[in-house]
Image (cartoon, rainbow, N blue to C red):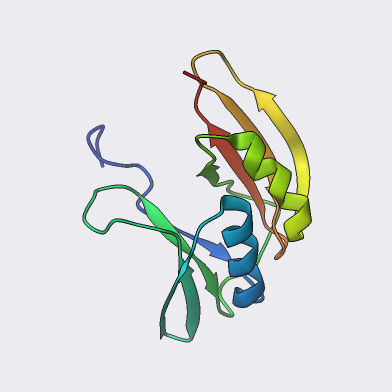
Length: 130
């Protein structure tokens, strides 16, 4: 890895109930997620992606190896262009706001933490308003 490559290549957000988790993320981000073929006993639902774009992407994953947690690594999901709209849908979709929208610098934008329906802690980030 060097400065010309993405430091994040792929992520998997653990799920206990892939259907419930998929509905939660589709609701808060107002997206459609793609069911992926089951492999090695894993059920997965992918976030919208353009294959070959070089952009990092990921999926929800349900398997005995994927255990939801609020400890450890935190993944920040892109809440552009309107972090407030995403935050406002979290609790109605069954999640919980753990840290409200917080400014992190004029040139950096804002962030928030939330718990999803599966018990994971994740972050949201949105760049500065232009």
